[in-house]
Length: 260
Figure (cartoon, rainbow, N blue to C red):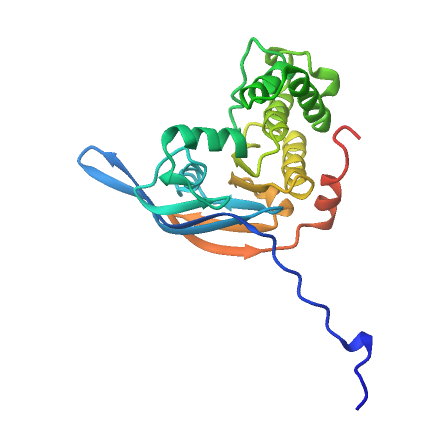
């Protein structure tokens, strides 16, 4: 019997990246007067290391509530969230705070910067809270700010910076911790097109070069080109969940240094 040629042997399937976070049956209700509005309706969700997962939907669809429940910021009424192998909502409050500090990065549309601190101090402060020595914290902060293209601006305060630069500080602050989970809630909504492109390039770099599971809530259709996976949610339910190949041009742009 003739052995099959090497060219005829099918390559082994590529294993999917490992699951970083998984949720089952998430339900969240909010009380309004005498009634309760169910914002999440038995939602199942997972996210993988090295993936950019876009959660898209109209205002009021439940997407921000979902991310808050996944990240340990808002306890669901029902369901379970397992993050990095731990049952998130079974953790005591102190350990939950420590989990977020050590493993999670957060980026919001409002930047959440301290007006009196320079860009360098914004990033260094959170690293000191993690327990890093001052010299190491400073070097990690410098590296993160350089990666987002703000090396020359690291001694400026928020009032001296543009909206896009403020958002890049927030991203540097998140990336400096080397998070396993990176949550972004409408990170481009306050930015123009050019700065929005820079932000999503940095989020994609966090997934591909740092191995984070990036979960980005948005209603900005421009961001879909950078996604590995797109989930559409409406009225508290996931309507569509699909993997996709990021646009080649967008993927190449994500690998280009910011400012190049």
